[in-house]
Amino acid sequence: MVHGDAIQLTGLAGSSLIGFLLVLSRVGGLFVLAPGFSSRMIPARVKFVMAVAISLASPPRETALRVDIKNVDFRTSPGFNIAAVAVIAILAILYYVWW
Image 1 (cartoon, rainbow, N blue to C red):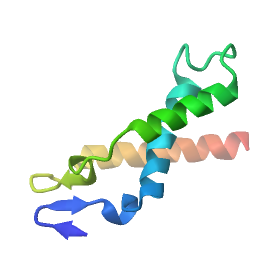
Image 2 (cartoon, rainbow, N blue to C red; image 1 turned 135 degrees about the horizontal axis):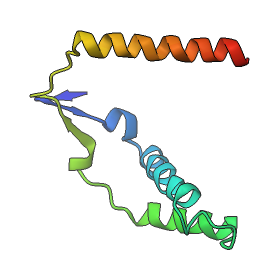
Image 3 (cartoon, rainbow, N blue to C red; image 1 turned 60 degrees about the horizontal axis):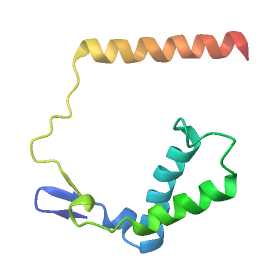
């Protein structure tokens, strides 16, 4: 939905369940990848319960559901486009060689 000069993400995260799952995926990544939290000394169940608790404790904010696009320039330079195509070509060659 477009509201003025901002896109409301309520279509994506409008329901409480979807919003909770988005927050949980972010917080869960912290417990999987962050040093200290990703240690094997902390059982997986404890990490999961902590991630769920933090996700439930995060209150939804109206400002978090808006992205201001009024002054955003979506154009890219020709150099960026050429570099992007080069990266894709290199990845395609690597994929072809090793798989």
